[in-house]
Image (cartoon, rainbow, N blue to C red; front, side, top):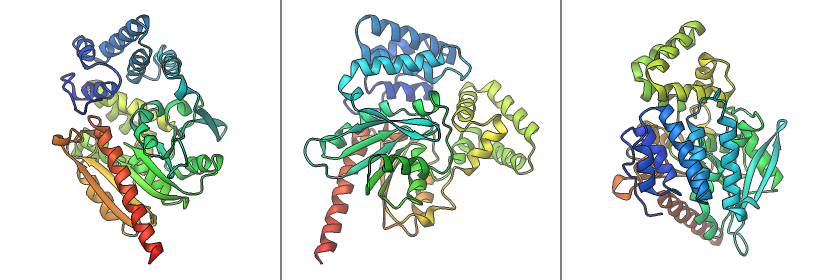
Length: 382
């Protein structure tokens, strides 16, 4: 894929997701589909039509990702949501049978965590565990992380609680303590030392796991995420979020739920985000979701992180306040080392998770790991 964050739709949220699709689907077709989309209802309808058309033409991977796009903006009560997700998985595996053969599952709390285990030719240079965040799928991740395998690393990409099929098929909900599912993955594969890479909300989850799991020797926050609540504060406006936080502190469940209902009525994207958050967290209502959200931050655990840390952040991230990259780096007072990579518009990497140029981040990870290896070798030789 040629790097570039493209103007595919005037709505920033729709445009961002269409740029995610652009990793596999043709930009011209995405523009044609997008031209018929104004509302979220339009999005679901047009992505379903595009999925069926691509499938009829035998373009299975493109069809799979249109099914994925349609499912993304379906509410949790949408009657076709489960079918759309399952169709995505089925077509994805038909399109990429070699990748499908690398699938396995790891048991966790009565459910299963899906894993795609990618092994390089020859002896691996090391093991990288990788996961996404609030709404990504493992299939989307491996598209970006394939070059790490080419560089000689074993990549174990997985979906933990609240993600992908772990949520949709097994009902596993996300909790702040990400070290617990990570430990199960490490135990299952008998991994004694690894690099952990977390994308998006994974920029919180991966450092959180590193604070408690000594088998993680290096951690990459692919997107700063010091405080997940700060992302919602940016979207709602800081004054409104401060008022909401005050209601949360005094336990005003009814008033919180009513306030969120008013916001959702006028902002479909915010309505989706809260609904998806309730689904991910298992919260029964917006009040419980925002209580969960307020726990998703690194303030109390950053001083427990002793590993080498790489944080990657774009200058125009529309989801995460830019200042969080500085907050996160400054809080790592006991880390072995802290490296920060700021990606710019000139590099096509300014957006959230460098959607326009994921190769930039993969190259940075390889350079960073090579530098740490040289450092450790020189220390051993001294």
